Image 1 (cartoon, protein in one colour):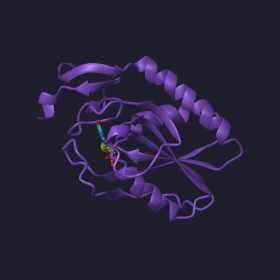
Image 2 (cartoon, helix red, strand yellow; image 1 turned 180 degrees about the vertical axis):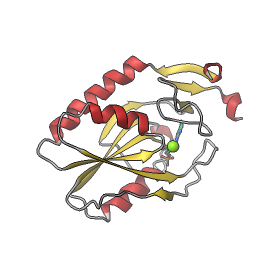
Image 3 (cartoon, protein in one colour; image 1 turned 90 degrees about the vertical axis):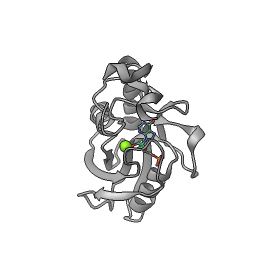
Image 4 (cartoon, helix red, strand yellow; image 1 turned 120 degrees about the vertical axis):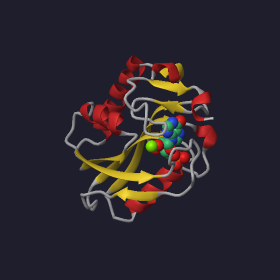
Length: 178
Ligand code: IMP
Ligand code: MG
């Protein structure tokens, strides 16, 4: 598996430090609020597991699964709900936890969908952002790292459902997907 990685983009230590920082900010901003973390499966599971433990205020969690990619590295533009949330959103301050904001189509779709369910508020927290590839006007309210336009894997992010278990974020060798 390690042989398929061209280089490490973000080390475990860098990610850990950033998650701590984000958790402190979120804890402060959501003090006294009714926080519900919504993790978008599967890419955000590792980030979700870490960020929820860096939040020092009460929060609830829920999960939804969508598909937009298949095994290709470019977005199809089609978002399909594979698993919906269990919790009705009314009255909750929803914070969507995502692995990466790329074209933005997935998060744009999810945010609009969830907004329609009347949450008290709705914001986005994403670990990674590739601003160069944005197709719709959407911004993260909490962002870990802006990264260059390269295909990355690890820390939950996959290529063809593999590499999610890498503890760091690395650039995949292009010959793996070309
Ligand atoms: P968007 O709709 O183009 O913003 O795509 C967001 C989704 O695409 C993320 O949740 C990821 O699953 C996937 N994705 C985008 N870029 C990468 C990448 O570099 N590595 C792995 N997955 C990616
Ligand atoms: Mg994904």
